Image (cartoon, rainbow, N blue to C red):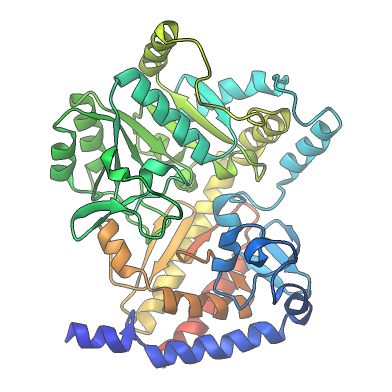
Length: 459
């Protein structure tokens, strides 16, 4: 019976109804954007695939939205359509578009030089700010979370003398090669769809399911894993929260195996000013944060514990001279320092997080109310200011369940329908962020729009 239903429905909604919604909402999208369609409907000139970055074509809208401006939590396209923005650059603008303190800092620094491979006075403030905010004593600056994760894993291998890392099925850590593995039918494989990857990534990466303590203990048992790289909550798929006690077990088992622990907070910084790590008392060896740390200016940070720093210093004293393979010329530039200092001191404040959390609770309750009203077999998951609706029953416990819960056709139809009602959410995983600039009115509009779409689907 389940198999028959899956052929005719997705997420409890008939395929014909989903197709009808996609068609009618696609037509409405085009009608509202004649200038955009004329300029980008056939692709942007000169770009491979018609877009500057390939994932711009992955949005489910008939063509990419051509943005004229963005301010606070609102995006305006070139046709004058205003959208309440809950995607916020998929966390890159989690604190709103061009937060005023960050914008002022950028203007100040622009007249002083943008990059010169040397620190500015802002760097004097940032080191202590990172120590106080996130708890680890030693830090480095990079440009993306991918870079930061890659560099930290290199240090982990250096100080442990071990080759392997361990990741969780369904994880997201940017484009770090070793994390591009999955479990399919219980077997580790390269993540499907990788372009030009000829190596067997499972040779140096182990992959297990999140929340499975027995699998974790077994994977660490050979004591050949240099580092476990983990999001405290699985994101970028369908959100999976940690079971009670799981993070305690993760830390205990990694220590027993002599394995280092990297916590990647690039998405879960939505939890609070110190991330999930500070709120829930995690104790990682490495801490990575990218995306919003500089208020939208590309930047990332990675920190290490006293013990790791001491071991890495010893390693550096004995290794052969030469390039470490870590670092990019534009990393740790003064524009990053200026924007990051403004974000840490004036934007990522407890007061702003309290406001964000309050509105996220309102959004969670409102979406859940709609789901219950129309008796949809869906659920809502939340970590701080990050909220997701998932078109399957929940809660989910691991990456395999998240993969099954993902409903691309249905989610694409909902996304376009929400855009037509003035609301933008993340295109790949139904994620919605509350920023300090987001208003209660915008949250209410999102709940109303979601209700209108649910009514169409559930009628």
